[in-house]
Image (cartoon, rainbow, N blue to C red; front, side):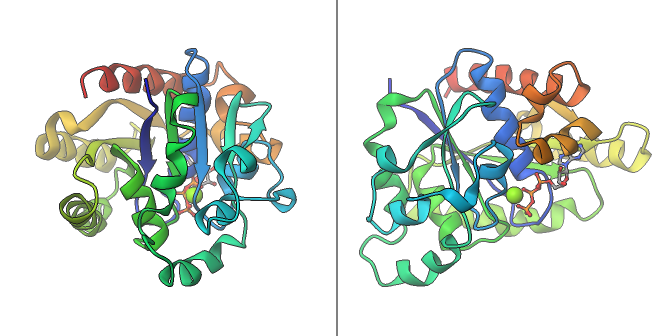
Length: 257
Ligand code: ATP
Ligand code: MG
């Protein structure tokens, strides 16, 4: 079976994309899945958060996108995570401009991943906070999109732009693409507003909202500074337990895709 490929996207900054990618990867590994994490953000946070030094990458996802290296050459192991990483660093910021000149600029990542699809059960792509050519590459490569969001008043505002981009890619470039689900993250049940927005989300999007809710949990925020996914840093914390449950929910959803 070839890998199922998912991108974690939301053009809003700081909504929990990277935390979700890293901890879902580790959560899936804990459930005996073979995982490749692709960092498609020049910030390189998913790379560092997996315990891989972004400054020492040679080659990185940048070289893969430009056809200068294969995924097999560029992937490295996250020791604490137990998954492979196709890492990113600042060099990737230049790819945006350089890709424009190239043939099949939207499908470079998709093409590159084909050669390793048999090595994994899941490929997870961490997107930058923009609807850029990098994000379009992720959307072209993926079978589905996972959208992390905070249950705040303006959360729904940006969603329309993201959904339109997904629709455009679906229509023109990737007929396989689906929205797998909206993931409620950094949730604080004591806040009435968050409860209300959460209920609105379910009312509006139904079973496109994942059943698992990720709570706000300081252990998840601390883990990256130790170069570890929260799931391995403190497995018994509420945040880690939630991401383990989310991993199980994803495995279940993939069965019915
Ligand atoms: P960017 O758009 O910059 O890539 P992002 O969407 O990837 O950001 P993260 O980096 O995952 O967002 O999270 C933003 C901040 O919130 C980080 O400091 C992270 O540690 C913290 N954070 C994420 N999820 C949680 C959580 N469930 N509980 C507590 N803190 C969290
Ligand atoms: Mg991020």
